Image (cartoon, rainbow, N blue to C red; front, side):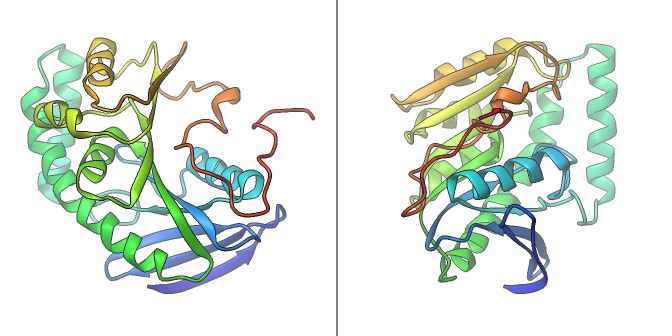
Length: 251
C-alpha cells in the first residue's frame, strides 16, 4: 500500500489517498487508535469520492472513531471500463427503459464484477489491518452484491450494512442464506431503478437472525438526512470514544 496524498480535515479526520497495485482508494482515520474499520463500498458507476460516501466516511470517523476505507471497484471511478462493461451498462439501461426482464443482463454484468471485487477487498483488508492505527473489528457498508460475496468468504467481517439500491444476481440471492453476520439493510421504498419486492425477498433470505430493515420513502438518491449516520454496520466505537450525535442533529 502506497499513500499518495494526506490532509488533516477541519473535523480532525486524517484523509489519505492510496494505491494498492492497480486499486485506488481513500482512507479516513480518527485521532484515536487502534480504530475499528468500515469498508465502504459503492453502487454501480460511482466513485470512491462520491459526495455521499465521503460525507458518511467523515461522519463515522469524526463522530464514532471508526477508520473508513473506500476503493474504486473494477470499472468504476478512476479505473478503466472495458468495452464489455460499457455494452452491459447500455443493455441494462435499454432493458429497464423498455420494461424488459434484466436478470440475464445482471448476471452477466454483476457476477464478474463481484468475482473480481471480493478478492480486491480482501487484499485491501490485509494491507489496512497491517497499519498500526487500525485494529478491529471490521464491517462492510455498501453494495449488497459485493457485501454478500465478502460476508460469505471473509471471517474478519463481523457486521454489515447493505444497500438495497443495486442489482443482485440470482445466484447470490440463494447465497444470501449463508450470510450470518449482524446486518442492516437499507431500502429506498420508491427506488425507480430497483424492484422493491426483490429487495424484500433478499432481506428475507439472509440467514442471520440479527437483521433489521430500514425502509424510507423516496427515490434512489433520496435517503433522508436522519439516516446519514445509520447506513453502516454496527461496530463498537474506538477505545475512549463515545458515540456522537447523529448526522443532522442540532445538539
